[in-house]
Structures are given as structure tokens and as C-alpha cells.
Amino acid sequence: MEKILNPAALEKDIAKCAKALDDKIKGVGGKRAVMVCGGTGCLANDSEAILDEFERLIKERGLEGKVSVNHVGCFGFCSQGPFVKIFPEGTLYHKVKVNDVKQIVDDDLIGGKVCTNLLYVDPVTKETVVRQDDINFYKKQKRISLHGCSLINPDFLEESLGYDGFKGLKKALTEMSPQQVIDEVLASGIRGRGGAGFPTGRKWQFAANQKSDIKYVVCNGDEGDPGAFMDRSILEGNPFEVIEGMMIAGYAYGASEGYFYVRAEYPVAVSRLLHAIGDMEKVGLLGDHILGTDFSFHVHLREGAGAFVCGEETALLNSIEGKRGMPRPRPPFPAIKGLWGKPTCVNNVETLAQIPYIIRVGAKEYAKIGTEGSKGTKVFALGGKINNVGLVEVPMGTTLRTLIFDIGGGIPNGKKFKAIQTGGPSGGCLTEEDLDTPIDYDTLIARGSMMGSGGAIVMDEDNCMVDVAHFYMDFITSESCGKCSPCRIGTKRLYEMLSQITNGQGTEQTLEDMKELAGVIKLGSLCALGQTAANPILSTMKKFPEEYRAHVVDKVCPAHVCKRLIQFHIDPSLCKKCSKCARNCPVNAISGVPGKVAYLIDQKKCIKCGTCLAGCPFHAISKE
Image (tube, rainbow, N blue to C red):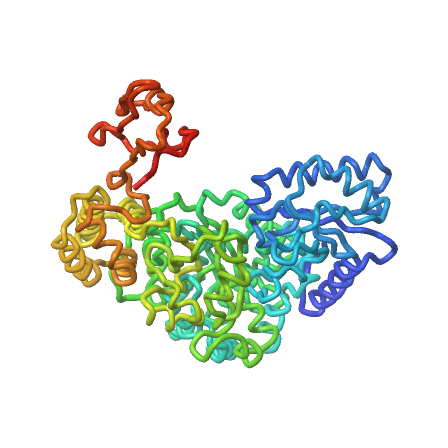
């Protein structure tokens, strides 16, 4: 692609690329297009080898020039990948293996026959579904942040331009003043998608009001919540969209430098982002005097080492500067004094991905989506005890019931829904009584949880909520940077108390001590990591008091999860005296006489490994 030197040239290229992409999707000239999922989840299941096999067989069958093959971003329905989509028909094949490629090439691409054995089967109606939009998982979603994912090749600038790419930037630079851009973002009502939910336009206005020789835009791609992969998938599927959002932000409040901060554990996202930056620099969409205007913008990338605390904006800024990732006291806030002491706005990946859409369609149109206090859409990484694991983007105000049972497909194996943890380690649990709660910032907080960055972990009746709190506190304790003593020491003490409870050593006083300490940590910690550290404990104690009471009073774990509170028993009336359990026991905790005396477990020796239960052919052993 030649240099794009002015708005007219960009408009011409957008039109040309849009026609090329439309022709590919519609199969103009009888051509077919194969799109293979290139998200991390599918790459881990051989999607790169699948693409290579397509290329090999297409060449071998003489289909070059008639069939194109590309990788695209995440389809979202991760539990059903790898996906292969065939255009112009829009046929979607799921759980494709390398060995299936020959059948798709010979039967579909050559023979024109759909491979029904590779189609998704609706678990309720048992009917095969040919097209993506007809699958229940997708029906109630609306893609704004995930715009272009699963359709465009994230390595091709041309395909981004062909799918609305940089229309927002062109409009901002040629039709709007910087203040008009800020006003539009303010009018849209968009709030930061990184967790706190602060109005994005207000943050930009603070930075715009500062006089400085240089200002910065920082994109926070350091999502560290367990089970979260929203930012990663957006960067993998359409990095150009996020760069465009960053550039619009820079134009709005006078920043000329942008920094991406992405964790090193995201090599695919990092690679595609660097490739996108390079391509944009080549054609002049990044650099000096973009589109012949006075606006100049340069983009850099820093890789994080995986510290959860660096998701906090001031710790992230320290890390970019080459310092240890530890929070700074606020005020001053980064919009006043941020990166290298200059005005800086730190925006989440998902936030920046929504900005081009807002500028393209206008604030009024965007504000029609969502609720009064929470506009637009939100991406969730839906995981845990759920049938449809994957990436979901829904309008704000969608209920938890819709998210879990309509889109998520409900709980596997006929188990009962117990809770959903939203907001990651900083959030809390919501239960069956909260299922009709609309998903928005204020409602979730009122219910004892929070939006967070978008992790949503579903739990069923087999989960122990004390153990869940123990898991999150273990994570928080490990990730505390140690700068302030309430977090450094307090989270460690909370973890120790929870360990006492799960080991059967806790008392009712332990519960009172945890509540008191949780309040101290919340009020005294320097950053949000410590201030929200006790949320999983307080939330589960409030929603599931009977489980905590069972652990500390009855010394039992109702869900049979906490090992020290489990006991295995052999029913003498069912025991066949075969000695298999005793022979399998790794610590010789089971005694009896083969064929004569029923076997018995010595609870003092038992290490709760469950080998006896798993190996008994007569179901004589139970877990209590």
C-alpha cells in the first residue's frame, strides 16, 4: 500500500479496501474464502497447523486463485474451537482437527457439499446449525469492542480499512476540533472498561486542561485477573482498532506519544500489535503530520512481566519508566502528572476499542445502547462451571440470567447454579437471587460485587465458597507489591485465617477477626489491589454464612472440597473384603483381612487423596 498523505487518499483507500473485503465475503467471481480462527485458544489446539494444511491441499488440488485462506481473530465460542468459516456461504465448522481439512477441501470447497459432521449441534433442539448467527451463543451479543474479530485478518491493514477502520480518526481530524471530540466522548457516557468505571471523557478533559510540552496516552493491556482474556483477544483480533482509539484520544487532549503496556505472556497479541504499528508507520498513519494535518503521533510498546499490581495505573506507569511496578500516592492523578511527570491518560484496551465506533456513529447512537448510567457494551470472559466457555460481548443492562443460561448455555451435567464471581480478585459473588440483576457498574456494586475488567467465573453446587475465597486471597497475597503494610501484612493474615478455617482450626472468633481486619485493609491500603483485597471474603461471608459456620462450628466442608475436613468411610455392609482399597492406599491407612474382615480407614493416617474411593468397584466407600 502506498503512503496515505491526506484525507482524500485515506477515503479512497477505505473505499477500495471495503470493496475488496466485500467481494471476498460475497464470493465475487466464484471465489471462496476460508477463515481459520487465529486466537490463542485455537492456536493451542493446532489452528496454525490447520491453516497450513488448507494451504497445502489447496495448492495440491489446483485451487490457487480460486480459494483464499487467512487466519482471523477469536470467534468467542472458545469451548467449540478451532473454528473454520467458509465464505460466501458463511458455513461455520467447529472443533476442526487437522485430519478434517481434507474432507472440507474435497467435499465443500470442491464438491459444494456441507460437511454436516463438523457443524455445531444445538444441545437443546439437537439440530445442526450451519451459520454463526444462528447459534444461541451469538444471538444476544453485540460486537463493538470485538469489531472485526473472526472476520478480518489482524495482520492486514487493508482488511481493517475495509471494515470501518480509521473512519473515526479521519472524521476527528477533518471534521472535529479536539474539544468537540472530548464533548462527543462525554456525551456518549462511556466509562472506563478496566474496572473502576470512571467516565472516559472526564479523564480526557482533565488532561486537556493541563498545559505541557508533551502529553501521553497509555493503553493498559495488562489484564491479570484469573480467567480473564478480553484484552488479549481484542488485541489479537483487531489491533488497528485499538491503535485508532489511542490516536483519537491523543488528538483530543493534545498527546503526541502513545504507549501500549501488554504482558509478555501474550506473545500473539504483542506480535500482531507490533506488526500493525509497523504497517501504519509505513503508510504514514503513524508518525508526523498524519493525513497532512498538524497532528503527529508515535506509538511504542512495553511488555510487562506479569505482575498483577501493574494493572493499577500508577504502578503501570512506574513499570514503563523502568522502575519497580509499585503504586504511587494519588493525587496528583496521572491526567495531571503521569508518565515522566507529564499529563497522561491510562485507558484500558476495551475502552480504546470502543472510541472509533463512538466517533463514527456519534454519541447519541452509542448512548442508545446500555442503561442510564452504563452505556455501550461490555466484554466478559465467561468461564468456570458453564457449558459455553468463551468471550461474550453484550449490551450493558443484560441480566446475569441471560449471560449464564441463554448465552452461556447453563451449568454442565445438570448441576445447580451456585454463584458467579465478577470483577476477579477485586469483585464478589452473586447468587441465584441476583440472576435477574442487570449488568451495569452501579447495580453490581449495590449487589456486593463489581464489573471489574470482565472476568466472570461460574460456580455450581460442587464448589466450596470458603475455598473460592481462599483461592483469591492466595492470589492477592502473592501479587501484593509490598509497598504498604495494610496490604503486605494484612492480606497475609487474612490468608492465614482462611487457611485455619479450611483446615478445621477456625472458630467463630476467626470470622469476627477477618471482618475487622478486612475493614482496616480497605481503609489503609495505598491502591485498589489492597482496598478491594477482602471483597471475595466479605462477599462469600455475606452470601454463604452457613458454609462458613459449617467449617468453623461443625468442622465439615458441605461441598467436600476442603481436604482436611473430608473423611472417607467404608460401609461394612457393602465391603466385599477384596483388599483392593488397602493395596492402593499410598500411606497404608486401610486395614482388614481379605475375604474375612471388612476394611476400615484410619482417619489419622488418611491423607484424603481419594484413591480408595476412585478404585472401589463395589461403591462401598463414601466421602463425607
